[in-house]
Length: 290
Image (cartoon, rainbow, N blue to C red; front, top):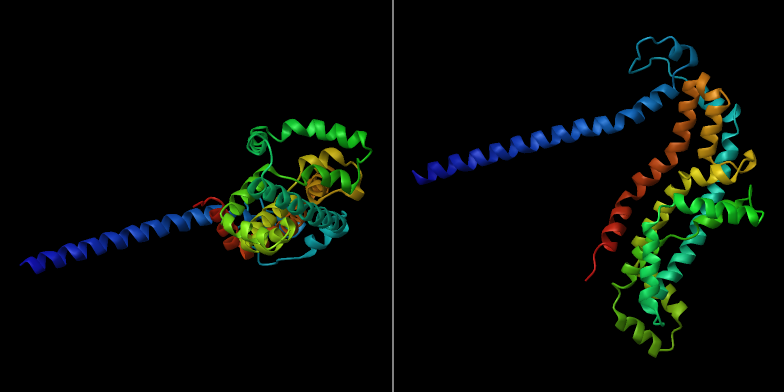
């Protein structure tokens, strides 16, 4: 009798567990469709012809006559290729310079001993409380006074450091046992050599995460490039999209506008899909200390 009751309870528990999983997966599927629908609609619109799009009084969720002419128009009608090149140059140089700055700063705060280090780091962290919009005017005046408007150097300089990334990397550096550093110093290893041969390889997941996040940040940068450049030769893709919209091209030809948005979005989507595990690994590593 006890075995029968146990079997019934076990079957009931399995049934509840199965129903719970089905309900959870159903909600996740619905939520996934809601999140992905804007991307689907963007791609669908980009492959519709100008005439087919304008003739739709009721939007259609598919097309039987896709066309890639909109992508050709996006590159030929406006200088999207030049905007792409500018953005790649800006992103690569800014990310490389930032990595150099934050690695050296994080190492100094994590391993070096100097007077006032804790106070200086506390003041440094307090900068995270200041909205970035408040320092844009100061940066604008500084860059303008230096005569660096409409230059790549003017675009790059305000973005070569990050308090958050320094803090994240410092926390990772402090996870490495200090005994390794002391042993290296006994062997006569310089600080820079120890940093490059020991600390950087160990913290590679976090550095990869920071690099990817910085690339995404640079690629999506809009306010500063829009403020400091008015020469199309230095426009980034974010400026380009705005320029496409303002010159009438985007307002009149929505499918071509969507094609330009797809082209700009694809590199970041691919980057995230390829490295999303490393991003999560690096962030979780930075949040664990012990």
